[in-house]
Length: 174
Image 1: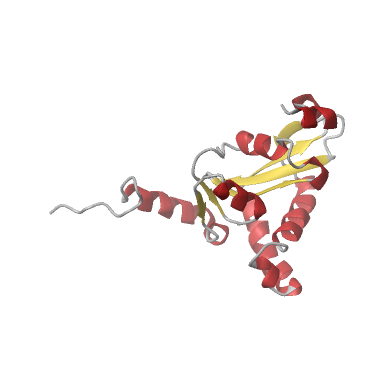
Image 2: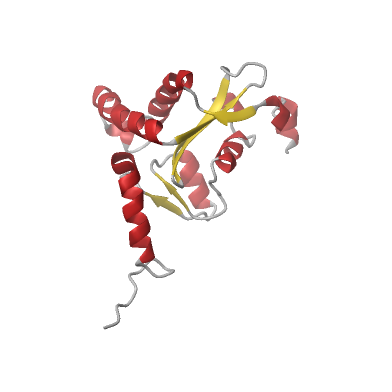
């Protein structure tokens, strides 16, 4: 742990990671939509259209995914950050601004089974995913996972089975 995170009091004992509950949905939806709308290309979508249309996609993803919440151990309703993961796809991770850069997001991703040192699939591109890509992490952008949910992932696994290690279609033998 860095000295900066210790100075902020952000050691593991100062937060718990728990599964999301019904009362978290409003905060998750609000912060997801507000954050996503700031990034290109979603920032080009008119605000009303974005919130109406993207809001439905986000609501569907939250309903079928695992939502993990970092919260205060003294007050489970005090949310510090959250991550939404569906079958190995990172839909979104959010950490409150004053707590960013201290490993809280990484702890959420670790709890969700997302390894940021390896190739990862994301449904949203933002400053954080671009920073990982600049560090050499292979980012696979799959915005369609928001639309099709589990059917999309099952089809993708079948497609992956038909590809070689480099992602190219395998040679067919007669």
